[in-house]
Length: 112
Length: 114
Image 1 (cartoon, rainbow over the protein chains, first blue to last red):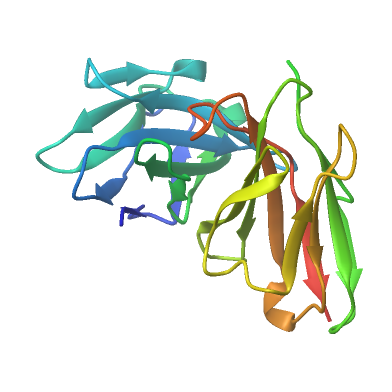
Image 2 (tube, each protein chain N blue to C red):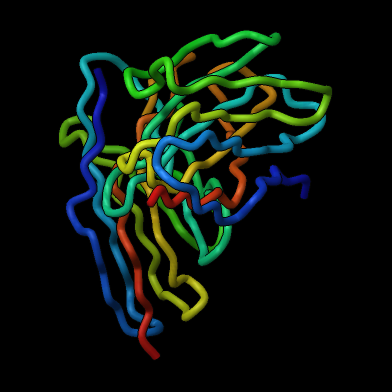
């Protein structure tokens, strides 16, 4: 079965600084990888996904993530964060036609 | 953009009581899901539903849980006799396709069992 580890439960960062949210997964077969974001009092929203092809995936709001098969990682990055990026970020994995398996989430706090 | 709607946003109940959490998925979606997140823990899959029947369920989804699509728009999760450990945020989701490359999630119902 696949699993997801988000190494940081909280990440504080100053506005306009770069950020990386870490995600590692384990699976014995090929998987699809996702990042979701949850803004306060809202549902989970898809940021980006990796299904196949280019290992660098660009998503909404200036975020990107890189699939690294050898390190089984799918870290999320943004070169310059804004106050509005403050939210909970969830990494998720699944095999074809199986339910999503989520990580515990990382709370990104952007400080003015 | 279309959205998944969940009601209520907060539900407080006494242990042993039945609760029904309601969801209105996106209208042209065919696959429906419930997930939950206990405070400080992972978002966990509970159940998926397609063509008026459960297509997959997790170990969490025991006999105390049931799902229903009573009409063409609502999708409900019923917990028959709530326990303290059922306290969690419950998320409904829907997708056009099985497996859901793009799942649309509701904003969740925070269930507190006292």
